Image (tube, rainbow over all chains, first blue to last red):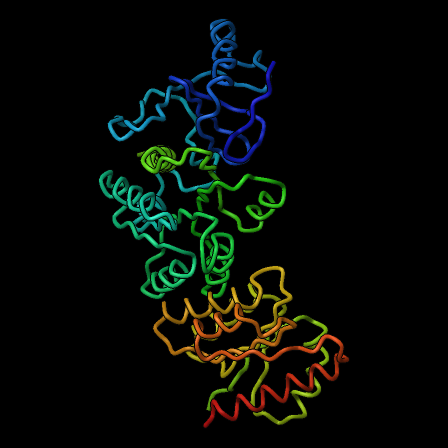
Length: 247
Length: 142
């Protein structure tokens, strides 16, 4: 059996997965996320599930669980309807440690920050999120320094953002420094519940980065992968955000 | 009158060596010591919150987490976010005063760099730092 790894955090696949087309969405034990693994790997898993899932609850698949729900990860994601209420999937938000869709916390998700130095991608993500009405307000920042300023201003104005999507490689102040600064500000302002961070970057998740995520707390990572197409990247990110907040 | 403070985010050895000379210098300020850039930023924001910004921030570059210029950028960003005036910053680092440092100083504004002599003893380094702090405080106080 081929071992599969979460493309978001490189953990081995442990939980449920969903298949459609050439993409596989994986919820892994560490990050609760995961995005389109290679088609060849998807084919292997699809064959495994096709031959075994009709007779088993998935435990026979070893580290790979049973298929529970199909998820499309394509540029047409914005046309997708609401999640199937019959699905028995555990909400990704619970695994990821982020506020679940039904909680009061989620209702407070008024503001999201998109921090990305690639102008086109930033604008696409901002437009997609605005169109989908997932948040009341989408604020975009082109580097870590302008984000820290906007974040401090937001807290000073009494508005605690619901989510921060952070690129890592950025000029002036990179995403990791910005996250450290963010946590320092929260500590100084006695904010007990940390604003969730979703790192969205080309960086490969190694042990030091995983340790960094643990240190930062309430943070998850999605790898951009090698796809340089801003529209596809924006759609992928939107798909994850929709799953995170149950949109 | 509220206590005037300076924030000193430097490595422990320099901080320990500097305490006596700072105390004996009679600067009329209470030093707040922290040992890395993240703690420095936390202490900085705490002081801003209680509307008692430090008179001066001293930063060195040996921190693993948010080294000096990055911590300073974050501090400047917080100042702008809170809408307050920039606090003077003294970089006391072993870095050369090269173009990169000059560029950072120009971007940050109200910031100066003093080279920390690596070959000097800790006592000598701390005295140099204390003298620079005294001089800057004199300027700040007009």
